[in-house]
Image (cartoon, rainbow, N blue to C red; front, side, top):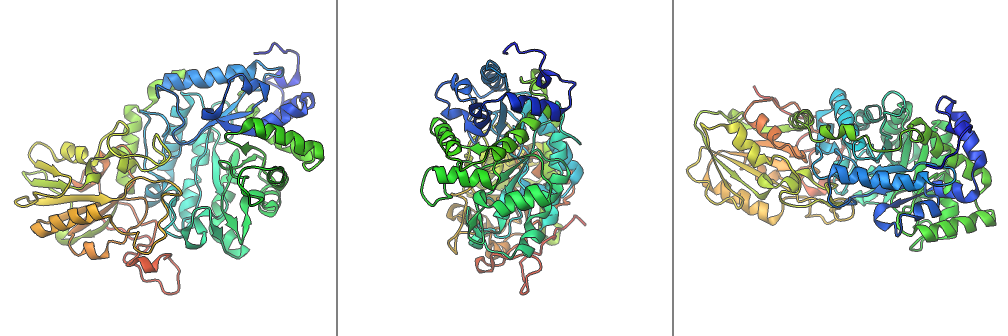
Length: 587
C-alpha cells in the first residue's frame, strides 16, 4: 500500500462524508473515471492495468472463476488484484463483485440454495435472512465484497427466460426477497457487510411477450404498483447498489432513462447508493453495436454511476476521457458518481481491511449451511395433486421405481447461474441428487430402482417420475413459440412409459417456471413442484417420505394451456389449472 499518512481519508475514525470529500479533492480526472469502470477479470490483459487505468472495480460474471476453482485460489486472486490497486498514488481499494444469486454459485463447492422462484413459494422472511447471511459468509471468505443480488423482478410472463430469478408474479413475493438486503448487508453497511445489489431496475419481469431485454409497455401507475415496490423496500433497507435493467419502458431503454434513474430513483425515492449498469448495458443506447461517445454520455448523465464495461476497458477509458473533455458529461455528475462509489467503499471498511477473510473458509458448504439449504428445499416444494393420499410414501418395504434424467442430475436441479452462466448437466457441483436423496430417506426397508428412460416400472409399488427442464439463463431461456412451455420429448416418453405400466405415480417437476402439463396430469396420482432446488436434493425426498410436510404455495398461476400465458392473478378471465397461492398439505 502506498505510504500516505496524516490524511483525513486515511483516518478510520473520521466521518465517512469527510473521508470521501478529502479523497475526492485529491483525485485527478483519470482517477475519478477509473472508479466509474468495472471489468470482468477474464478480460484484464495485464494486472498492472488495475493501476494504469485506476480501475475501481472487478467482477466475476457467470463462470468467471480462477483455476483451480477453490476458496484459496479465489482469495489469492482477489487479494493479488487488491494489492495492485493499493499500490497506486492514493491507494484506493477495489470493490470486487460476483454473480452470487443462489449461494456463491461461481465457486465450486459452495452451498447452492434454491433459486428465487422456490424461495417465493416458501415465502419465509426468516429463511431468506438465514440464506443471505450464509451466502455473505461464503463470499467474504473468498474475497469479493459485493454480490449482484437480490433480483427483485416480478415475473409476469412464464415465457421469460429469467422467470426463476424472480420470486413470483405478485410484488408481495419480491418484497420477501428484498429481505436479503438486510441479510447480506446487516442493518447498516459496515466492515462486516456484503454489499447487496437490487436488480434489475425496473420492470424487467413485465416485458411484452416475456421477451428478455424487451419492452415493458405499462402506464406509470402500473409500473409503480407492480414492479417498483420491492425496490422501495430495498432502498428503505439501505441497499448499497442498484443494477439497471436491459429492458425498456414504453420504448425507452432503462440504461438511458433519466426520469427513472435520476428523478424517480435518486430524487423521489432518495437512493444514496450507486447505480451500476448491467453487462455492456449501455451499448445499445444509440442503436448501434458497441459503446460510443453518445452511449457513454447518455448513460452517465441519465444517472449511471459505474459502467460494467466489461471487456474493452482501454477503449472505454479513452472514450470517457474524450467525452469529459468535450463537456458532454459535467464535472458535477462525475463527482456525484465517484462520491457514491467511494462512500460504499469506506462504509465497507475496504480502506482498512481490503483482503479476503480467510478465517471464514471452513464455513463454505459447512454442515450447517447444507442443512439450511435442505430446509429451504423442503419449504419451497408445492404439492399440487395427491389422489388417494398417495403421499407421503411409507418406509415399510415398498418397491420404488424412479425415472427421468432430472432425478440424477445435480446440474439440472441447480439450473442456470451455477458455475457457468447457462448451467450444465450431470454432477456439476458437490451435493445430493434427488435420486440419492430418495435412496437415503427411503431407508433400507425399501427397494429403490432407477431407470432414466422409464423402462422397467412394471411390478413396482410406486413410481417417482422426475421430469422438467434443462438449465438455461437469459437469451436461451426464453420460450417464445406457442408449443415450447411443455415437457421435452424425452420426458414425455418417460412419462408415457411409466403411465403404461399402471403403477401409482408421483411426478416431481424440476423447472424454472410453470410448465403446461395438463394432459400428463391425468396420469399422475400425485404432483410435487420442486422448482430448481439447488444442491440439496434430499429436501425433496424429505417431503415425499414425510420427514417434512409440504408448505409451499404457488408463486405463479399455473396455466392450463400455453395460449393462456401470460396469466396472472387478478386477470379478468382468470381460469388457471392451479391458482396463484395454491398448495396442498398432507391430510
